Image (cartoon, rainbow, N blue to C red):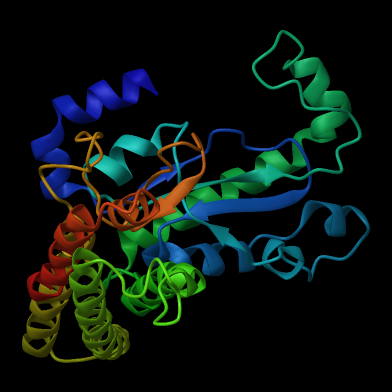
Length: 320
């Protein structure tokens, strides 16, 4: 992780201009359950790739029609930290994913980062025959092919903006749960503090901004899908030039969409983390937080910082 961070910082300008996505495989296989944490923009490419790879256990039983996608629980977690994707996602705003075959029902305990984390353990217990290592390599390759060879970048902006709404709803539900502390009938806390009132006002504006962004993202995805369909059909050379030029514009917008959520001053007390939507939890280590600036300010009841975070998030809509 230290090496990847230093390398990405050294090549920040090039990566910011050219990189489309980052695919991370830390532990490729130690069991038979597919597991992934990823940016919502990459949801569709993960689904498409896992649908094309036969599940190794099913194949061994003679069933070659059941894919990894079919037996997967379809859960895509939020990226946190602890692996090489951190600098790409949280510092550079490059949509990232981490994946592998894991699970809690392993025959033997996985001796992570120990002398027992060996080829012998893997060949006997983790992945006999290394069938799931082959499967994760196929999935990785198919995702890379989709991202590099599709005429129109197969991102899903609708999924991203839907996630933004869900993240905000989670924060609002937490606030609603604590709103009973402020009641006209409460002898000591009849009204919320003025700063909190301002924060709630900006939070409402942020909700409207996210809604508008959701509408625009849905329209943009539909336009991109139509363009991809047009490019798949035969057309005169001059028409194809026009379509390719449009595809270049769409792809550029997809590529830089997530960069719009970078804030160069970074998070409070953690200025290196510059992504406004995703960051590892301040006190949780590997697990990820969404809207970290808001979550941390609300949990600390720092309403002034929460207002500033609200305003920053709200301005992101105008950059897409």
